Image 1: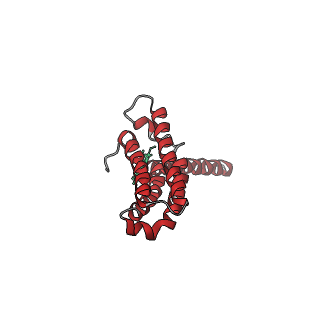
Image 2 (image 1 turned 180 degrees about the horizontal axis):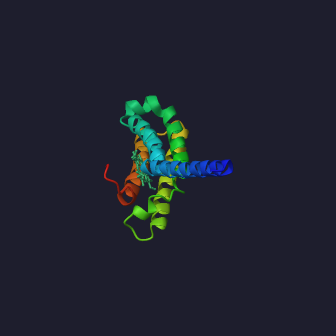
Image 3 (image 1 turned 135 degrees about the vertical axis):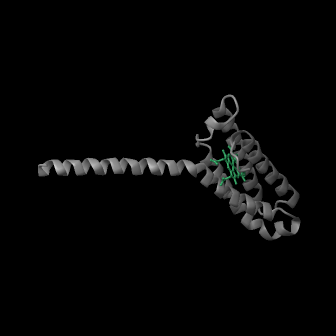
Length: 151
Ligand code: HEC
Protein backbone atom coordinates (compact mmCIF):
# COMPACT_ATOMS: atom_id res chain seq x y z
CA UNK A 1 0.00 0.00 0.00
CA UNK A 2 1.08 3.50 -0.78
CA UNK A 3 2.12 5.40 2.37
CA UNK A 4 -0.56 8.05 1.92
CA UNK A 5 -3.29 5.37 2.08
CA UNK A 6 -1.86 3.87 5.23
CA UNK A 7 -2.14 7.27 6.94
CA UNK A 8 -5.75 7.71 5.77
CA UNK A 9 -6.69 4.21 6.96
CA UNK A 10 -5.16 5.01 10.34
CA UNK A 11 -7.14 8.24 10.67
CA UNK A 12 -10.39 6.48 9.74
CA UNK A 13 -9.69 3.79 12.36
CA UNK A 14 -9.11 6.43 15.03
CA UNK A 15 -12.38 8.12 14.10
CA UNK A 16 -14.31 4.86 14.48
CA UNK A 17 -12.72 4.26 17.89
CA UNK A 18 -13.48 7.83 18.92
CA UNK A 19 -17.16 7.46 18.05
CA UNK A 20 -17.40 4.21 19.99
CA UNK A 21 -15.93 5.98 23.02
CA UNK A 22 -18.54 8.70 22.84
CA UNK A 23 -21.50 6.31 22.69
CA UNK A 24 -20.07 4.38 25.61
CA UNK A 25 -20.00 7.47 27.81
CA UNK A 26 -23.56 8.36 26.75
CA UNK A 27 -24.67 4.92 27.96
CA UNK A 28 -22.98 5.47 31.33
CA UNK A 29 -24.62 8.87 31.65
CA UNK A 30 -28.03 7.28 31.21
CA UNK A 31 -27.32 4.72 33.87
CA UNK A 32 -26.70 7.37 36.50
CA UNK A 33 -28.75 10.30 35.37
CA UNK A 34 -27.92 13.88 36.22
CA UNK A 35 -31.26 14.27 37.97
CA UNK A 36 -30.37 11.31 40.12
CA UNK A 37 -27.11 13.06 41.11
CA UNK A 38 -29.00 16.24 41.91
CA UNK A 39 -31.54 14.27 43.94
CA UNK A 40 -28.71 12.86 46.02
CA UNK A 41 -27.78 16.44 46.94
CA UNK A 42 -31.44 17.20 47.64
CA UNK A 43 -31.50 14.19 49.91
CA UNK A 44 -28.50 15.43 51.92
CA UNK A 45 -30.20 18.74 52.65
CA UNK A 46 -33.39 16.87 53.42
CA UNK A 47 -31.65 14.63 55.96
CA UNK A 48 -30.10 17.61 57.70
CA UNK A 49 -33.48 19.33 57.90
CA UNK A 50 -35.10 16.12 59.07
CA UNK A 51 -32.58 15.69 61.86
CA UNK A 52 -32.79 19.33 62.90
CA UNK A 53 -36.58 19.26 63.21
CA UNK A 54 -36.78 15.91 64.99
CA UNK A 55 -37.64 17.56 68.30
CA UNK A 56 -37.50 20.96 69.97
CA UNK A 57 -34.08 20.35 71.54
CA UNK A 58 -32.46 19.35 68.22
CA UNK A 59 -34.14 22.30 66.60
CA UNK A 60 -32.79 24.80 69.12
CA UNK A 61 -29.24 23.63 68.50
CA UNK A 62 -29.47 23.35 64.72
CA UNK A 63 -31.59 26.40 63.93
CA UNK A 64 -28.86 28.55 62.39
CA UNK A 65 -27.61 25.76 60.14
CA UNK A 66 -31.12 24.82 59.11
CA UNK A 67 -31.62 28.17 57.40
CA UNK A 68 -28.55 27.39 55.28
CA UNK A 69 -29.85 23.95 54.40
CA UNK A 70 -33.18 25.44 53.39
CA UNK A 71 -31.40 27.99 51.23
CA UNK A 72 -29.45 25.25 49.50
CA UNK A 73 -32.69 23.34 48.99
CA UNK A 74 -34.21 26.33 47.17
CA UNK A 75 -31.24 26.36 44.79
CA UNK A 76 -31.51 22.63 44.12
CA UNK A 77 -35.28 22.82 43.64
CA UNK A 78 -34.78 25.50 41.00
CA UNK A 79 -32.01 23.50 39.35
CA UNK A 80 -34.21 20.39 39.14
CA UNK A 81 -37.13 22.04 37.37
CA UNK A 82 -35.62 22.19 33.82
CA UNK A 83 -34.83 18.44 33.77
CA UNK A 84 -36.89 16.63 31.18
CA UNK A 85 -35.42 13.16 31.38
CA UNK A 86 -38.20 11.75 33.58
CA UNK A 87 -41.11 13.09 31.57
CA UNK A 88 -41.47 10.17 29.18
CA UNK A 89 -41.47 7.64 32.02
CA UNK A 90 -44.34 9.30 33.85
CA UNK A 91 -47.78 7.74 33.84
CA UNK A 92 -49.69 11.01 33.72
CA UNK A 93 -51.34 12.98 30.95
CA UNK A 94 -49.48 16.17 30.06
CA UNK A 95 -46.33 15.26 32.02
CA UNK A 96 -44.60 18.59 31.31
CA UNK A 97 -47.34 20.55 33.05
CA UNK A 98 -47.54 18.13 35.97
CA UNK A 99 -43.74 18.22 36.34
CA UNK A 100 -43.73 22.01 36.34
CA UNK A 101 -46.50 22.12 38.95
CA UNK A 102 -44.65 19.71 41.25
CA UNK A 103 -41.42 21.64 40.72
CA UNK A 104 -43.12 24.93 41.57
CA UNK A 105 -44.58 23.40 44.73
CA UNK A 106 -41.09 22.18 45.69
CA UNK A 107 -39.53 25.61 45.02
CA UNK A 108 -42.28 27.52 46.81
CA UNK A 109 -42.33 25.35 49.92
CA UNK A 110 -38.52 25.49 50.17
CA UNK A 111 -38.58 29.26 49.82
CA UNK A 112 -41.19 29.53 52.56
CA UNK A 113 -39.12 27.32 54.82
CA UNK A 114 -36.03 29.40 54.14
CA UNK A 115 -37.85 32.66 54.87
CA UNK A 116 -39.21 31.28 58.11
CA UNK A 117 -35.87 29.88 59.29
CA UNK A 118 -33.79 32.88 58.29
CA UNK A 119 -35.67 35.05 60.78
CA UNK A 120 -33.81 33.11 63.44
CA UNK A 121 -36.67 32.97 65.96
CA UNK A 122 -39.24 30.76 64.27
CA UNK A 123 -41.03 28.51 66.75
CA UNK A 124 -40.29 24.81 66.47
CA UNK A 125 -43.84 23.77 65.57
CA UNK A 126 -43.96 26.27 62.71
CA UNK A 127 -40.62 25.13 61.30
CA UNK A 128 -41.64 21.50 61.51
CA UNK A 129 -44.91 22.22 59.71
CA UNK A 130 -43.17 24.23 56.97
CA UNK A 131 -40.69 21.40 56.42
CA UNK A 132 -43.64 19.00 56.25
CA UNK A 133 -44.93 20.90 53.21
CA UNK A 134 -41.54 20.48 51.52
CA UNK A 135 -41.54 16.74 52.21
CA UNK A 136 -45.03 16.43 50.78
CA UNK A 137 -43.77 18.04 47.56
CA UNK A 138 -41.07 15.32 47.31
CA UNK A 139 -43.59 12.53 47.79
CA UNK A 140 -46.11 14.00 45.35
CA UNK A 141 -43.58 14.22 42.54
CA UNK A 142 -42.02 10.82 43.22
CA UNK A 143 -45.43 9.18 43.08
CA UNK A 144 -45.79 10.10 39.39
CA UNK A 145 -42.23 10.53 38.16
CA UNK A 146 -39.91 8.32 40.14
CA UNK A 147 -41.03 5.21 38.36
CA UNK A 148 -38.00 3.08 39.11
CA UNK A 149 -37.57 -0.22 40.85
CA UNK A 150 -35.37 1.09 43.66
CA UNK A 151 -37.80 2.65 46.09
C1 HEC B 1 -40.38 17.59 40.52
C2 HEC B 1 -40.18 16.22 40.88
C3 HEC B 1 -39.39 15.83 42.10
C4 HEC B 1 -39.35 16.46 43.33
C5 HEC B 1 -40.11 17.68 43.79
C6 HEC B 1 -38.44 15.69 44.14
N1 HEC B 1 -37.93 14.63 43.43
FE1 HEC B 1 -36.60 13.24 44.13
N2 HEC B 1 -36.66 12.29 42.33
C7 HEC B 1 -37.41 12.67 41.23
C8 HEC B 1 -37.18 11.73 40.16
C9 HEC B 1 -37.82 11.79 38.78
C10 HEC B 1 -36.26 10.78 40.63
C11 HEC B 1 -35.66 9.59 39.86
C12 HEC B 1 -34.37 10.07 39.22
C13 HEC B 1 -33.62 8.98 38.49
O1 HEC B 1 -33.41 7.92 39.07
O2 HEC B 1 -33.23 9.24 37.34
C14 HEC B 1 -35.95 11.16 42.00
C15 HEC B 1 -35.06 10.47 42.81
C16 HEC B 1 -34.78 10.77 44.12
C17 HEC B 1 -33.88 10.03 44.96
C18 HEC B 1 -33.07 8.80 44.53
C19 HEC B 1 -31.74 9.24 43.97
C20 HEC B 1 -30.88 8.04 43.62
O3 HEC B 1 -29.70 8.08 43.90
O4 HEC B 1 -31.43 7.11 43.02
C21 HEC B 1 -33.89 10.62 46.19
C22 HEC B 1 -33.10 10.20 47.42
C23 HEC B 1 -34.80 11.75 46.11
N3 HEC B 1 -35.33 11.82 44.84
C24 HEC B 1 -35.07 12.61 47.17
C25 HEC B 1 -35.94 13.71 47.08
C26 HEC B 1 -36.29 14.55 48.20
C27 HEC B 1 -35.80 14.36 49.63
C28 HEC B 1 -37.13 15.52 47.71
C29 HEC B 1 -37.75 16.68 48.43
C30 HEC B 1 -36.99 17.42 49.40
C31 HEC B 1 -37.32 15.26 46.29
N4 HEC B 1 -36.59 14.15 45.95
C32 HEC B 1 -38.13 16.00 45.47
C33 HEC B 1 -38.27 13.76 41.16
C34 HEC B 1 -38.51 14.67 42.19
